[in-house]
Image (cartoon, rainbow, N blue to C red):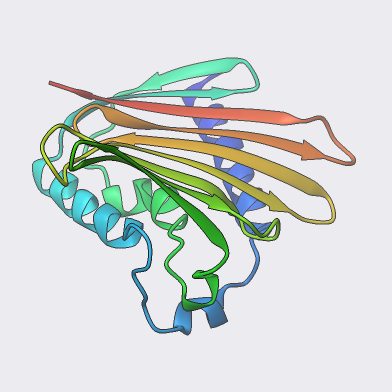
Amino acid sequence: MSSLRMIGWLLSFSLLLSSCQPNNKQANSAPKVNAFFDLATYIDEEAARLDKTQPRMLKILAFDEKNDSLYPENVDFVKELKPFRDADINKLSWIDKYRTDSLFSGSDLQRLTYTALDSSLSTRRLQVDFAEIPGQVAEITIQRRSKSVIAVTDRKLSYQPQKGYSLESWQGMRLVADHHLTVDVAFIQ
């Protein structure tokens, strides 16, 4: 499949995904509470860092078993990392809607895991693994699910600050075939 056709499919798929998202304008206007890991701020800082350094990257797109590779330049990382930022769970009304599990090695925090207790929440699981340097993130993995009358979409996102990120999406629809989309981005040293 040509790059242009692949990009066309991806844009169509992205529009469909975004149209299936609930309207969170009220939730976004609530005061910011950091009861959990502050994913939004972390991703904003990472996007600013990457926008400044503009690392070389290899992007591999796969849509329903058709692959394409790109070497994009002048990437807008705020847009690229938006799916990660959108998974932030720090909303005042959600404080009691996630179970928090912590894993320590001695006194050092190794992992934080937040699991949704309410099935209506899109971010089902958020896991933050920390590097050996205290407070430094090694990897963030996120599982999301959204439902509408016509589709169910499951997404798995993974971000490693020095290596890259991946987004994987499965969409089951009532009237058309299911779709699988994968975007793997590797930072090239």
